[in-house]
Image (cartoon, rainbow over all chains, first blue to last red):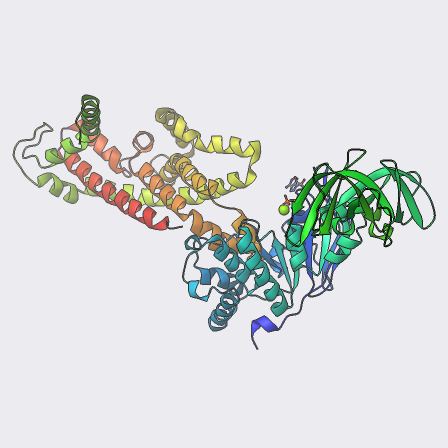
Length: 372
Length: 262
Ligand SMILES: Nc1ncnc2c1ncn2[C@@H]1O[C@H](COP(=O)(O)OP(=O)(O)OP(=O)(O)O)[C@@H](O)[C@H]1O
Ligand SMILES: [Mg+2]
């Protein structure tokens, strides 16, 4: 009966897409399928090509190579205004000379929808974003969060089968961001449309998405659920970009099902096979590393042992965080349950972990921003 | 208020400059009510005969109508061309845009007499002297720079991303222009139109060259009347024009204020 319950999400199929600006390659042969009704986030550092990909889907930029399909239709040559895709911009892009209601009615007017139906749809959309009392205000009379809600209402009022959002919450403070994240999640559930959401805030991506595509330098490094990306990163970049981690670098011996790395004098084992000619690393999550007194040795399957000195100790309530300096000068972060007698800064300790909790990855030279 | 010396001097200077700026206007108004046919100041006697002469003499009223018609036509043509040019220039960016802009603005910089001679020479060949077409073309040339500047200033602060948003909402390029771009640059267009109107309405130099006895604009009529005899009708015309322009500019200001809600 109403406009807002009829559509289902459409699949987006990106096939071998590249984008060149002169001699600069902004997107290098990316392929990605977003399933109907899925909430997909594009996550990656600044300049990695997220907005470019979104603009290609929306039709604001022309493809250099490849194909994009929306549902069954190839949309490469369809002009932006005929794609029927909702877009929410970081800068809101509300029309300043129109009231909130007029802004939201705009896409309906373009579609020649009768005035009575228009009014009803606008009311519904504004209710969805809890702005029904603001219909007659002008954008300049609204706060940033309210403006973004209007932008959201305007982009979904015509029930597009695909909704694109480019860092829609980027300009808002943390509290408001969290509130709006929940709203966006709810709206996604209610609408059933496919959502593609650009962010460089990994927490936001984890909270919102079914799957995340990690972008880096114009390529997609990995696509998967937040859990997959966190526990089974396929590249060092992904491992370091998602969540906290420590990276152990050392010479390795190519072996069978397990690979051994020599690091700071110790031999450490990780599952997986390393190619002999490429450097490899072990990626460790802080919660899988145990801090114990020097000389304790292996126990409970924690057979990888590495000595070090406590550089920093933080009490986080239920957990404690240690930063331990190794003999080779590198640091490892460990998060342990709160201990009654924590190790003091400067004391010699042992780090222990189960070999299967370390991830063996080819060293692509990437470094995480947050590590000292 | 503390009246120290520098402050007093500043106020005095400002006052003098203000008087200097408006003095000619206020000399004209009393003279328009002169009792005798002479342009002396202060005027002697009082009469409304010069106003009466203006409204009844076909030479005067005819030239007013010519000027008003012409100014309307020029402001329409110049606003359309100037607005399109300003949009084109804004979208081109780059160096080509700068050159085109400079070319469009030259009529404002080139001395009027030089332009007038050039136009006159061309018009002699093309038989445009003393024709409506001739006047409209010449005045439009002079008015376009004002429109380009006024609209350009407005476009510089116009957020082009709104057009992208409109496209994503289903509006074609043309619809986007009429529903988004045009309303938001309308203040610039209106002030451009006003400038164009005024430019044409009080243009003398070029008009003097291309005038004909059949088609004479008001400024030309004033000029020839002045050179022939000291007719206070000129003062009456001046006072009327002053009144009219004050009204137009005042309305323009009020209009502009209201448009600036965004
Ligand atoms: N019009 C353009 N001309 C030239 N280079 C461009 C253009 N647009 C984008 N680029 C380049 O393409 C690369 C990818 O840009 P993009 O905007 O997609 O990054 P992003 O992942 O969205 O980054 P951010 O998180 O900062 O928004 C950047 O290096 C950028 O400089
Ligand atoms: Mg971006």
